[in-house]
Structure formats: C-alpha cells, structure tokens
Length: 151
Image 1 (cartoon, helix red, strand yellow):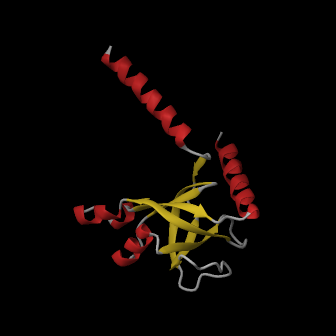
Image 2 (spheres, helix red, strand yellow):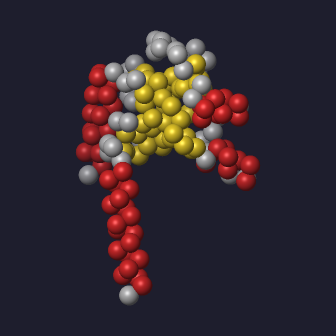
C-alpha cells in the first residue's frame, strides 16, 4: 500500500510542477553569451564583454544555464538585488544571428560551491524580460519544434 501511495503522490507532484510552468520546456544544449549590465540599459545590439556558457534547457519564458563561468560574488549579489540584469545572446542555430534578450536571475545553486559542488554543476535559472514579439515568437517556435522532434 505504501508503494501505491508513494506512486500516487509522485504523480500528483509531477502534475503540479507541470502546471506551474507557464510554457513548455525542452532540454537543449545551446551556446549562450551574456554580460551583466545596469538595470536601465536598453541596448541589445551587442554584447561588449561576453561570458560564454551552455544552456541546459529552454522555454519561451527563460533558460537554465549549466556550469559556472567565473562570476564574482558581487555581480551575483547585484543580480539578486535587481541593480543589474543580464544581456544575453542565444545561438539557436549554427550560422544564424543570435537571439538577443535581457534576463533576470530567478534562482541559482551558486552557494553550493562553498559546500564543494563542482563548478560544472552550478546552475542559473534566468527569466527573459522586456521581450519583443519577434523574440517571443522565435523562441516559442524553436521550443515547439524541438519538442516535436523528441516525440
């Protein structure tokens, strides 16, 4: 009986987590370049001092990055406080122009470095902000296409 109850609980938990997601998410490894900018920055033309990392998964509302580049703790604190945001470029397809957006930090396990977690296991959850309709349409179509290829 306990096994059946646990399976039912796990099923309900998975269903609840799925319902919490605003948009479908696909596990996809793409190149991401980003930099920290002041909150009042609006220029998306270029990333002047890029930090390169890989995505773990992507949705129309955000991206999870995996592996920790060298990030100063003060920059992380500024992201958490909201005095800085992220200007980023997503390279969804080789040879095409990147998809540019701003993002804010939603969560990270960066603090786990102090407990011995390797840098390559550090994760950052970013939410796209101030997105244009073309950006939203492109990222939504990309995710839907990737999900279609998996089924």
